[in-house]
Length: 151
Image (cartoon, helix red, strand yellow):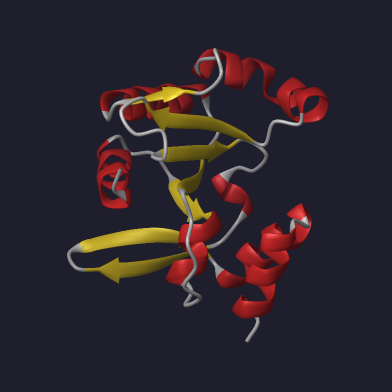
């Protein structure tokens, strides 16, 4: 799955999105491997339904037996009681193709920076907000990312 395919579809559907996670780290100059595409969106029922339709149309399915309506309705329950931080999608043809829609944050929580690659413009979480998000998670790989991003 190419990031450009997903971003093209998100833009066509007028979904306010932002790239976070490993791809954002790469955009900000620290090259590291990542297996999934992490995104945040404006968390509305309409946007969640659009994202679900887009990803399904690109051959991806939800890892859990939940749909957009469930994510929207039970978001706080999933976060508080099930430790769910993202709605995960994967390709049945290639399970290494993964997209995570973070449900713990809304796109309006952060500032975006735009990066032009070829003819495409990508909206990426700002470096400062990315560092703050990674501090919040506290995972070892995120602490390493913070160290590299802070140079």
